[in-house]
Amino acid sequence: MPFIKQNRKQLMTETMNLNFLAELGLKELNDGTSTGLNNFSNGELIESYSPVDGKLIGKVKATTQADYDKVISEATKAFKEWRHVPAPKRGEIVRQFGEKLRKYKEPLGKLVSYEMGKSLQEGYGEVQEMIDICDFAVGLSRQLNGATLHSERPLHRMYDQYHPLGVVGIISAFNFPVAVWAWNTALAWICGDVCIWKPSEKAPLCGVACQNIMAEVLKENDLPEGICGLINGDYKVGEMMTNDTKIPLISATGSTRMGRIVGATVAQRFGKSLLELGGNNAIIITPSADLEMTIVGALFGAVGTAGQRCTSTRRLIIHEDVYDTVKEKLASAYGQVKIGNPLDEKNHMGPVIDHDSVNTYLAAIEKAKAEGGKVVVEGGVLEGEGYESGCYVKPCIIEGNNDMEIVQSETFAPILYLLKYSGGLENAIEQQNGVAQGLSSAIMTNSMRESEMFLSYQGSDCGIANVNIGTSGAEIGGAFGGEKETGGGRESGSDAWKIYMRRQTNTINYSTELPLAQGIKFEF
Figure 1 (tube, rainbow, N blue to C red):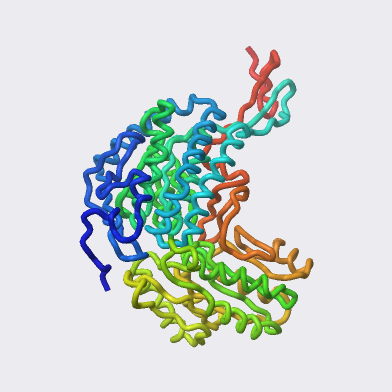
Figure 2 (cartoon, rainbow, N blue to C red; figure 1 turned 120 degrees about the horizontal axis):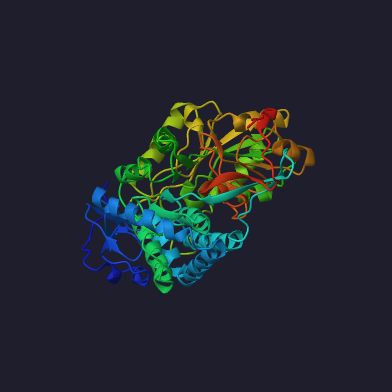
């Protein structure tokens, strides 16, 4: 079913209050290519329809090869200047960007909600993540330190240090249309890198809006073109970056299929990749778990962002002693989920991103049934007033087993699988780890032994392992990412900054002699 298309001369005058578009400098037609203050584009039009109401929000002109060549040229030039700026001064620029985000938090949060479909609270929360990573990066700008090392040679000193890498290419996904970009840029900028961003073609206006906000900072500080670049388009535009030897690092967030292509392409030219790919996240529920807390965590993890987070809860691995109780309580909780316009804060869940996602969701349910899955909470597409976009679906719960093909794959939709285990915790861990993905995981337990086992080398094989908290969400201070088909990359906190820099080991001889390795001597 196509999107409802109405008269769209001036969308800001439509029934819904869309004043936030003008606040962000968005127009009916926007250039999708930028080097900072200079905006241009000569490609085809990308039309952005809202999954909220099916209406056209605006259009963005895509990036051509010639447009891209201008962006990479400016970025390359800017890097030579930007790297001379002391790291704390670069941190000051990021601090100012964070202040701008505070100023524009409300309109940008509304745009995220309207263009992508997540709840307004989640839209504001995503912008807050951007603010938080800026704050984190400001402090980090004074801590880009290496280690001083002891040399085996007398009167020698060794140390390692980190230098700016160059141009960083960022490819982000629609589900977090602004935060993931900020995670990368805030750290890359304080490291002395410049950035080129290709946002998802499913949320191009979010990219233009962020560029407009950063442009204010660039102008106020008289910074050169090229520090903050923007390109727009489909995978072909992304390939311009992945194939470009002038970009030493590509940070890509998306599907495992996309990651395989990006990783192989970048590796072939000996570039670096930071890959954040699929998740198939599970919560283990043990007999000692606090079930009230468990239901809250499982519910939000499964239906938040309409199941379109890479950290969304896909599987509940429940001990047989509490299985029926959990199933009953969860089904009851699902009955209380309010689905509707995500800009209305009384609603818990908005739409999925587009009709392709709806079809994927429906196909997954049918496949699960065909493989023997038993439906606990029925899914389906919502129709009628308020659901005109055709993108609103019901969260679904299906009983199954871990070996089912559909359970082994990630469906980006609100489908939750209930899996049963018996015996000891090791049996639950085996199920949890028995998928190709390795992003986020959690255990609900009041047993210290169980929690410590889950966090040990014999426990979760995921990059994120939580105790008595759900799988979804990320805290800025921690390194975010996963293992196996999740790609192995780490973003945001801890020492994730190191991937944006090149490492160098230095040895200094302050003696009057030059001792050679293995005692070799030259007689003159």
